[in-house]
Length: 449
Image 1 (cartoon, one colour):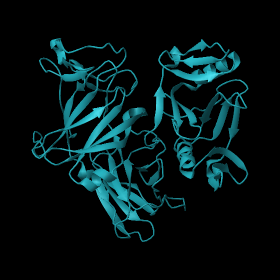
Image 2 (image 1 turned 60 degrees about the horizontal axis):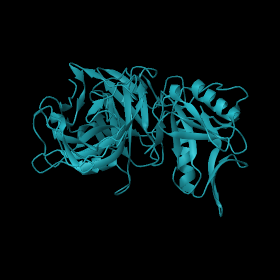
Image 3 (image 1 turned 90 degrees about the vertical axis):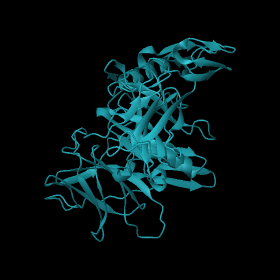
Image 4 (image 1 turned 135 degrees about the vertical axis):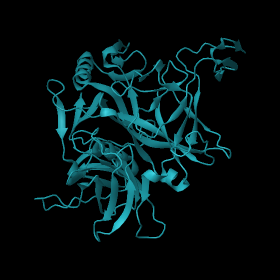
């Protein structure tokens, strides 16, 4: 049976109290006391109340001193949602829920842990049920529709699945800590999804037993049940080589070797890796490229059908979606080429690495599937191909550089950390070319895979 998240609907006579510009608004009563300032387009601050329940033994119990992790979620196709840890709060001594602020248009979900170490170390979590979004027009949190997470909500019986409070069961049993080789090592977390086929992430095998083995000694170092999600979580030392095997109803998944292939299916995870999920399938295992894991990814969503221009007094053209000024182009030709590129690429997200910092930010564009585009996006496309396997970081007294081989410098920044952050995006989205609209001084840069 699926572990339920129990929520309380904010309907009927429930009174929601929110501070609004120095006054107090009392939910649906329509009564407002205090001075009112009309802030057009600004939504009130909203908090989600989250507690821990005792499912399956005592679903209605309010568990005290449990750690609630909030994960900011990046939707992925086929109803799988990847979350990165945003903050951790502890429930009260009598099971009182925590109050967590959620900003407009943030997509979030919550996981509860009894163990503080697990709560702090499980920095990513894959959800297989729709997370919650604070839509601009809502004072509640509504589950997103995985077919259109930007604008639509999941429908429930009698209306949207919306709430301001919920409880969730603890998930300590879904994560295992691998036996360590050193004392008090730093650990990184990753996930293994058990699937019938690699092509369909919805073909998960529920409640499979997943065992982790040291690739050098072949000794078992951890075991956990994948549960209803079909996903097993692990904590392991960075760089340690391992492989995984899963069993369910007498059927095996994964393994160190594949019949007819002499290449061992062995993995390791570095603390800086941007992708930390693997898939195990019948008699094989492989890296699961469906998930890109970029902590605190800085992306602005937009509707490509609403893109327009503003002709400035200096003769430049500003691209806008009616909400924000997205980019400036020196002439009409570059604006129209960029617009064609965005439309052909199906871009709906404009993303940055290092925005607001010392260095010039790196920009990249993603489509509705939260991936980089493929194929030719405009006529006379200006792209430079590269081999990710040859990328390396070089530093000198002037700064840091992302190199392809020894001579070709692709990107530069003032610090090695800044370059690694840029390389992380390129690796996570499996980019193979860097493209430009207008050179030198490109007015738009995008990557393709």
